[in-house]
Image (cartoon, rainbow, N blue to C red; front, top):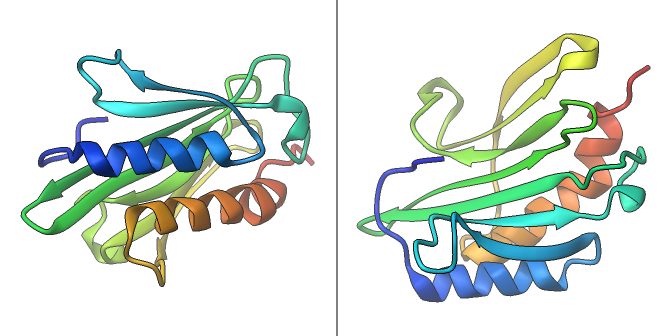
Length: 147
């Protein structure tokens, strides 16, 4: 983690609420703890991911920062069962791809890539909900298979 900028506690409470309401998420907690609150970590029900995974629960880390009015965020999924991970990042790591990029790493297939991405919404909670839908309905089923 480690994005530039400062946090907004009201934004984090909204993000936490979205994660709690999302059907595949089983638990949500601040990391490293409830006092420091650097990012949110959600546990995902492995049997509800397509393709199914397990026995360990995949994680979804959400970090959101602001430099002035400019948001920086990471919405990143990681499956320790397979090593597959992916997510949307709004940071300065890949300026050639634009403000937001999607990246994935699939060790079982020796694949990794970065691509431009965008969200129509601008409110953090709406971006997160859209990302979760894309992640579980499109990206994981498309990218995480071992065949």
